[in-house]
Amino acid sequence: ATTLAAAAQQSGRYFGTAVAANRLSDSTYVGILNREFDMVTAENEMKMDATEPAQNRFNYGNADRIVNHARGQGKRIRGHALAWHSQQPAWMQSMSGTTLRNAMLNHVTQVATYYRGKIYAWDVVNEAFADGSSGARRDSNLQRTGNDWIEAAFRAARAADPGAKLCYNDYNTDDWTHAKTQAVYRMVQDFKSRGVPIDCVGLQSHFNNNSPVPSNYQTTLQNFANLGVDVQITELDIEGSGSTQAQNYQRVTQACLNVARCTGITVWGIRDTDSWRASGTPLLFDGNGNKKAAYNSTLAAL
Ligand code: XIL
Image (tube, rainbow, N blue to C red; front, side, top):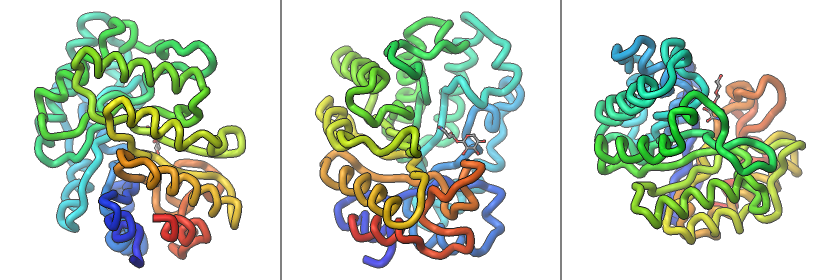
């Protein structure tokens, strides 16, 4: 196979990227997107602030530009994200209690209903656990509505779009020994045991010198999968360059390929210049759209 998508398809997987609506007029960008990827995540356009800028006034303009482009090209879509403490609209940031809980559930229901049938998997809840060694939930306005806010969001999403896989997505959940990883694992285990509808766990997998690819990464993927959920690498980027970066991409890709229920990999942008990282070169294509060593090692591992 000569593209990431075609190579991933050989084992029944997908290879995706984050897409920004304002780059869809860039022909180099769109050329790589159309050629290499078969799954698309809106980088910002499906987030709460984008889709519900004023309460109960939903705006799908930029999200639909991405969805329509992807579907027109025969690509699938990961929905990102229905409920999150970050990138909330201002009206929601100041809410609390029952009012906030109901507004969040209404948001989940409305957005998942609007896109019903068009989404492969939704990140229903994003980044709900704290960093560090506590293993606790992250403090947020949503968390303060009650510990059951996550399962309530999943139940609302299932009711709105029964065909979409429903994922919990987070970062710093790559190292199996990390308290945050263990805490997410216990939540998923609890949800499965009580019949809370969850189908997948997303590992963002933003790697850099402070947070390198852990040696037990495949173990983490396998342990989540063993709970009876799919696992997906949802926002992959790896700081660095040259052969070191290429080896890291190869390891991550190989780990996914070695876990039957790792269903796909998404990188968080196309060219280094499209990355959310202010500086650095964490992606598979350089600023000119040329394939990097990391591209070649990833393709070879698929
Ligand atoms: C980032 C986007 O890439 C940026 O453009 C935006 O300014 C901030 O959000 N975890 C997530 C993503 O789940 O939604 C974030 O995306 C990166 C970290």
